[in-house]
Length: 401
Ligand code: ADP
Ligand code: ASP
Ligand code: MG
Image 1 (tube, rainbow, N blue to C red):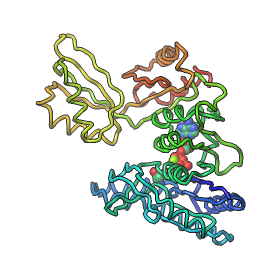
Image 2: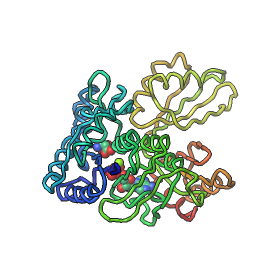
Image 3: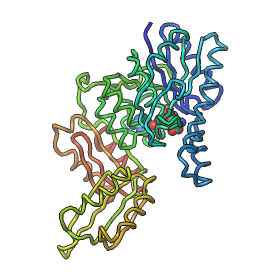
Image 4: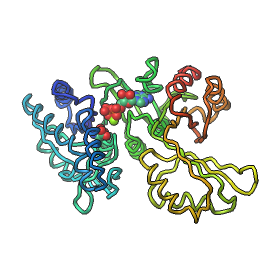
């Protein structure tokens, strides 16, 4: 018998009727294979937990992760009970019971190890294991969470560790689309995507897969399928680049409103200053993304603009203010109402004019570009958040997606 990992996201387990639908899908697959099902919390539950934490303004990591991961405890209980009622020999497991060992970076913990022997022995005795996504345990025995959307990563990590035959990610859309189908209804389902493209799409905002899950799948050469839990048909396969028949110049457009812009002006134009600023932020685990530096009109001082995730903006401001004398800047400005729009495609590597088309399209729509960053297969621009939908739709059309 082969091992299949099936992951169901929040909208697929949003109520009892939907959990019963999941139980049916699982039971069909369990006729032929051993199954590990990874589930998220019911839709909206983790948001609710996050709001409780905000309400009490808690910065207590141990408690916060206990609260955040609680939703998954409920869904594994419900699904496993329903599976038993339809005659499936099922075992519900929390992350710590496996154990899924993580580092101690609460709210963005990385999986360090999964006890394969233990889970294999469970698999010998049960037909289906129902595993809570998004959670693990650190070396000190405290519960950790993997970051929002992290159940995908639990599924890929367990599939990789146990060399599963397949890892299917069931969700509320039929696969990965050329852009978010909830913004552009004309978006097209993509049948096959390279890991690299999916990685760029996820890391630039396409939340259909957790970025780290794609990284892990790529590292382990594990084929992923993203498919619907409501309609039975093939979804999108995320595969090795070699398996792509045609490399699209642009396969997708993604957006992220989770960006904040920081501008430092009037800093001395001398060697080592960027290293100082970004070294300070890196030492506090703040992920800086886009960076633009320019010399001011006097030719003596410079301005630096960069972006950080919204969650880190207050902390970033505090660090920069605390080090004002050392950095020696004139003014510090921040803007949370910005959005990053990206176009992604493997074929971009060997094609010119892709960036120009992007800039021209935005210009034609009177959208100003605040910063630009590129990789071999991606171009990202920062724009005013209020133009997000207009920009995504216009680019989707411009590249004939
Ligand atoms: P789940 O709860 O199943 O994990 P998510 O909400 O995390 O589901 O991810 C699915 C959602 O991702 C879709 O409903 C869609 O709005 C969004 N999404 C963003 N970009 C894309 C894309 N390019 N293709 C498909 N879905 C996308
Ligand atoms: N329940 C968690 C979240 O909402 C994890 C997940 O759904 O993947 O972020
Ligand atoms: Mg998700």
